[in-house]
Image (cartoon, rainbow, N blue to C red):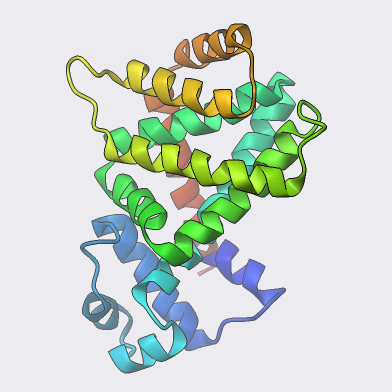
Length: 233
């Protein structure tokens, strides 16, 4: 279930067979139950590796979440790149990624738990902020030539806080998904000095799409990507 994860780590710090078994069970349980409802004991029961050995390989459950978060960030980067190439619109590629994440977490409780946990826990949150700062530097540096990489890192402290607030805000009859996407996108785009006219235009373009369907398909493809090694079993 973790072919792409193993391949990436083979280039850096290869996993042992026992670690691979732990990761395979962990990701399966995280996707089935969410992060919060998955315990080390559940992982032990599923993979057959003793709890003491699991915490030897991975010092905490958060370290196991980090493995999945790194893969998810890589998938988000691919989604942005594909959208940018298709639309030839950097601003839309950025906005689309944010909107799809909001729509996914609003409609998939386990996905929400994974994202919310990743943004709430210190280790994964720092990794997310670092990744996002680099991503947004590459997306916006031509629009903001006076900004340094450090400047993007500083802005990301605020941007990630806005994204965490989006995860904590639940839609209802009056606070619709479209309103939520529009509000949070507008706030994020303002950080990057996008004009009111451009903000309005790109938000309208995003809201014209079926973000819920796209989010469902995106997460399904992500799970399929994790399942890629099943074809070789």
